[in-house]
Image 1 (cartoon, rainbow, N blue to C red):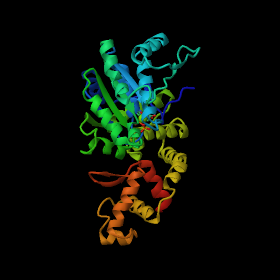
Image 2 (image 1 turned 30 degrees about the horizontal axis):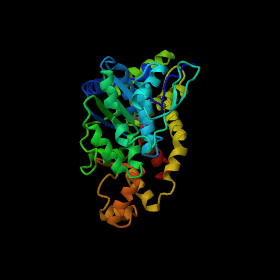
Image 3 (image 1 turned 135 degrees about the vertical axis):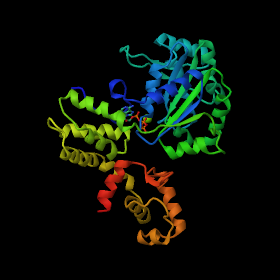
Image 4 (image 1 turned 60 degrees about the vertical axis):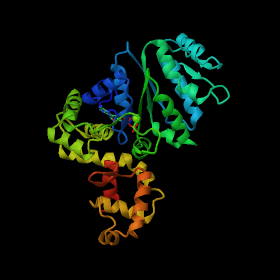
Length: 375
Ligand SMILES: Nc1ncnc2c1ncn2[C@@H]1O[C@H](COP(=O)(O)OP(=O)(O)OP(=O)(O)O)[C@@H](O)[C@H]1O
Ligand SMILES: [Mg+2]
């Protein structure tokens, strides 16, 4: 049976809602060769959005190449993935992949795995090493290929923060920026989920990628756009859901895309022909249980001070942690201790600094934490 709600993986088709403005804007950027950086908290819908734009760009003008850097542990692992994606995704058929390699990576003898299933991807092991190709030659590939093809290439790099974890990362970033910024026929869309790491890469004046492109902060999908989406899914199953309860689904998880779908799915599973307040309560309970193991892991290794800080947040304190009152009420140690606590919790992505103060990054974690540790 077809699932009504999908969460945790990139979505498309009728599982993708709204994002019209963002789709239009990114499409324009891709077609105009504008470099972009896309940043948002986790699970907000970056990958889904880029995939969507990839499907709607004018393919006669633009070829979009998508790379996920999540498993690249060092510079050359990245170059291998980067080059393989370019070879494969600019070619329609397997033979064209081989032709690409012969033309653009002449010094390699790659291993190519053809699957009998015509829909599955060609597996490609290029064997790029510092002995056969320099970083510069690999980083130049998009420009060379785009010139040859007579089409613009947009290289989308997902989980780009991974590059910040490489050994000697700064020099890798310098090479990338130095080469990519001079290219006329290739542009880049860099995005990922670790917000504080990405902000360091792109918003710090001393970093090579500073002002590399337009920065787009992906905002939550508004409740008014979720309404028809959720209503339609319930109607398909013959279930009636009041508007206020859809609003409550959205507000409970602060409109964080993946959680909206997960909570809506729980509501549907708990519902009869109608959805009531009790259905929603049970669904929230399920949501907390489904995530509790993960949340417990996130608390592992936290000190008493760090836990105390989270309790203060859960009690609605978002600023002035260094005041005598807060320090004493929550046992946070000294004022300077507070900045150390914050910095660790930010590293762990548990909290973030927003214009209205220090906040939990994850709305469901916040609910769970308040319930488990503050009651
Ligand atoms: N436009 C959308 N319409 C409906 N649901 C969406 C949309 N975008 C994202 N979602 C929901 O959010 C989930 C996560 O989406 P996606 O993987 O694209 O986010 P992400 O920001 O790339 O996440 P991550 O931080 O894990 O990389 C999806 O499974 C889906 O439930
Ligand atoms: Mg993603």
